[in-house]
Length: 104
Image (cartoon, rainbow, N blue to C red; front, side, top):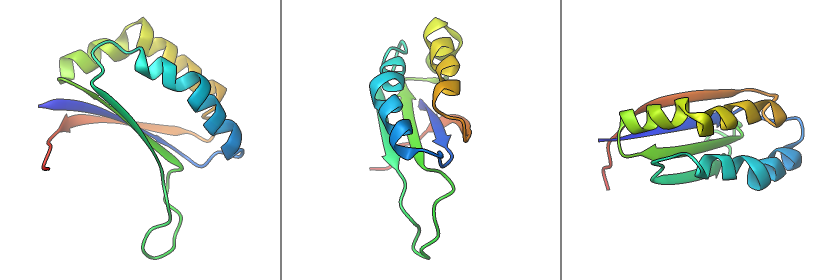
């Protein structure tokens, strides 16, 4: 079973600055994580009721297993990515991990 880290970013004060930093700096730090299998990002949209989503952007980083993910996040590359959060994620980020099942 693969393991996934979801980084759920709250709505920033300056979305353009957030997007620029993420694309120009933070994404490279994510791509440098050892064992990374896939890395996607989603800008959220309002729900069916028109309400804004609780998060502005959600990144999903998938690894072959929990041990590989844990090693990547606790290594120097993971430390660099976590340290960079203060440079653009001032509104806050929730980090959620878990085993991932693919259904399709």
